[in-house]
Image (cartoon, rainbow, N blue to C red):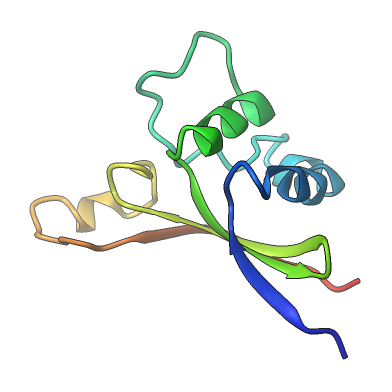
Length: 113
């Protein structure tokens, strides 16, 4: 039985995340690389998908937990504050309320080998 490890998505784990995403067509939705829920503020004109996700990760503006089986990322879950992930559905439920320290989960992927 394998032992799994959980590591943060950051510059040191980017390549493993990228391999996982590429294996699944950029995580679906036409290869968006799970950027749909991120703020568009500050995004360079025309930068989308993988290049934009990589920029967000390297700048510390995209957060996720990666599950590793050895050196391979086999699952992941994106999370972030409402400011980081403002396009989560049901946003109106959050508006006008205090959610200090609250995080949002937007995507998760669990794979069997």
